[in-house]
Every structure is written in structure tokens, then in C-alpha cells.
Image 1: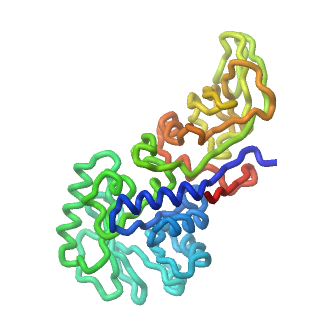
Image 2: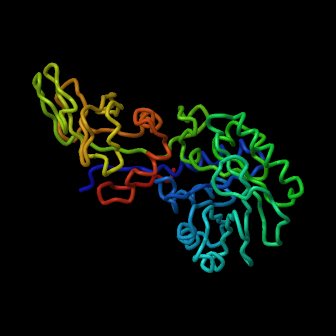
Length: 337
């Protein structure tokens, strides 16, 4: 039997897409569904995003794009990463490619300009060939340093004055939400689409609804006497009689080892995760004995992935993309409305 259940609320994703479309006010929404839709399921999320008004889908690799092409034969699909030996397949599937060097022929291309990310991208634009349909850049600090992001935008605008007939795009989720001047012709939104904040705050502040929820149950309740411990390395030692609940979810499922100290809901009440999270289980501190089968919510019902990210010293992108939504260890449920 599955040890937990992950629910993907496609209705929430559609509402997020519509909210972003309204906010963008004429700028096209391009839905980023790479890395299996940030762990949410690429095909389901792509369909919901298109239903919500997205005009294109964005992925990192050609194989990701080919999976989508089967389901969405007419969709516009942009591949961020290089095609390499997969160029012929990309051409046959009518994909659009991002390039930072040579421009391949007979396939739609977006030329990437490096304005400050310091990764891929050309230093300056040259006269585009006829198959270049877009020019783009990627903002390094839209979620943390808007002034530097604005500097990048100014460099991009200055470099693309002669190319306004092409599709120009620079905004990610953070820029789309906070820097209206970044929206240009299209905005590539990923994390916001899934109802997660690029700023690590409550997504409701930006009118977004979390799409993913994750639930399990108490598999065992036990009483620790003073001096007794639970888990590896005796990570939690009881100072007094203490009930703990064991949940059969661990870091192999995506509940990271460094989530000790975060909170989950047990029977609707916030409880602290204690001890060392192991591969297959974690412990929560209880105020009383609870029966096996008592509901536990790791994400959802007011428990935000942003909280867990702060506890782990990371970002929601990493947590979401590592939850094992396709594993036999978890049941994946989809809610349409």
C-alpha cells in the first residue's frame, strides 16, 4: 500500500494561470513545465496551464519536449537546453530551441543574450537569420535584488532595440510579479504557476494557490520515558514522558533529512518534527497518544512548502521537484476543479 498520497489540484493551477494572465495584461504567459512540472506532473500541468491561458510551454530538454508533443500536437514548445544530437528529433517535432552559439537551420530559434546571469548566452547579438523568432535573457536576482535585475533589463533593451519585430522575453515568475517593466512580449513563469512563492513568502500575497498537497498518517504511537530517544544518533531525547508519532515517510520520499524542526499537521494540529529524518520515516512530538491511522499533512491545509524550505535552508523549487510523485511509495491523485 502507498505510504502517502500526493494530490495535484489542477483547478488551482488553472486559476494561477488565469491570475498571471490578468496581471501580465497583454504579455503572453509561457508556462515552464520542466523537471516534470517542478515535480507536479508535466503533462497534467501543461494541459491545465494551456486551459488557463498560457500560450506556450517551456522545458529544459528535448526529451521533455517530445513527451509533451505527443499530448499537445499543436502547442508551441520551447526548449531551454541545447539539442546536440537530438536536433533532428527537435526539428521533426516542430520544437523551438534556445541557442547561445551557432544557429541551426530549419528550426525556430531564440537567441539568448547573457546580461548578467553568467551562464549560457552570447555576449552580443548579431544580425539574426530568418529562422530566429525570439531573443531572450535570464534574470539572476529578480527575487532578491531588483536593482540588478533592472540593470540586466536595461542591457537587454539596449541590445534588442533593432529586434523589436522578434519576440522578446526576459521575465521569470519573480520578475513577472514584481517588475512590470520586465514583461515585454512574454513572461516565462514556472514556480508561480504551481502556487509557490519565488520570494519564499505566503503565495496568497500574490493571489496564488498552492497546487500540491501531501498527506500520510500515524503508523505508530509510542511513549518515550525521560532519557529515551527516537531515531538515528539519538537526535531527540525525551526530557519527560513524551508521546511521539512515527510517520512512514522519509527522505527517500522527498521529506528531506534537514526538515527536523519543521511543523506538520497531525489530526489538524501543528506538531513539530523531532529527531533525525530517516530514509523511510520521521517522528513528530505529540501531546497525547493518538491511534494508528491519524491523518498527517506534510503540505497543505495551511502548511506551506515555503515553511519547510526555510527550515531546510533551501527553496521551494528544490523541495517540490524532489517529492516522489511518480513513485510506488506514494499514491498520486489529481483533482480537476
